[in-house]
Amino acid sequence: MSASKRTVFFVSDGTGITAEALGRSLLAQFNDIEFDQITLPYIDDKAKAFQVVQKINNCMIQEGHKPIIFDTIVNQEIRQILASSKGFMIDIFSTFLNPLELELKTKSSYTVGKSHSIVGDTQYATRISAINYALDNDDGIKTHHYDTADVVIVGVSRCGKTPTCLYLALQFGIRAANYPFTEDDLDDLKLPNSLKPYKNKLFGLSIEPERLAAIRNERKPNSRYASFRQCESEIRGVEALFAKENIPYLNSTHYSIEEISTKLMAECDLNRFGH
Image (cartoon, rainbow, N blue to C red; front, side):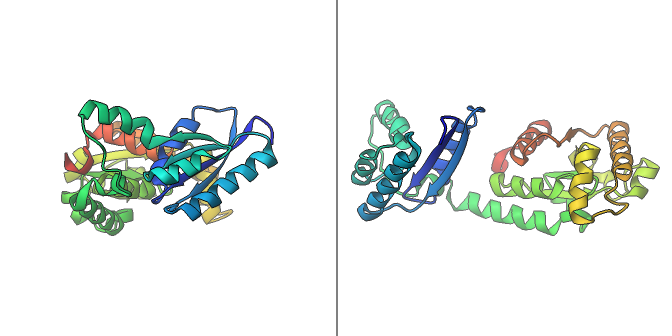
């Protein structure tokens, strides 16, 4: 394996989500290197740890480069076993917990799973409620429930409304509904009556016609719905409507769902879990 490609292990005694999240954020800063990413969750005893070491060492022999290891193991003995491998180890917990212990003048509990339980049952319940709300108010199904929405995402079909709503609900407990503009809406360049009372909650998504046509062609190939001409007409119309009604919007083409959601929250001044 060339130096421009490296294997990365995310090792955890829990789900591995924390190791993945921080590790991938750091790896994203290295654009010229391709990373083969392997997640190894629930490494919670010595036998499993030794198996991981064997995998890492085999990888080192086959590729000629040290695999990179991001770990969130809290058990000291298991961490020492991992440290005996031939990989380049980044111990996430010790990197941050040790300075925190010094500053807080107390020892960490070193409890498995704490990173996911710290938010408590209240935030979990808020997430579940928000997810149910997003599913129940998807695609303009129940506009009479918009009075309880935190935000109503509007735009043409297949521009990213539904996944953004679900991400906002799952990650931040935000009650997000979405409404798809039809050709009739865009012909009149007027907000539908069902949206007018909630204009202050609206946030628009747009997308480049080429990208929209590609997405729609996956769903309905060679249809009028998926044609570039139709997509271009709808995008031109929806952006004109956003401008006319002074609705804030974002072109989603080059952004991930995470980025779209963060920008939307900042624009709409939405807070995580209502705080």
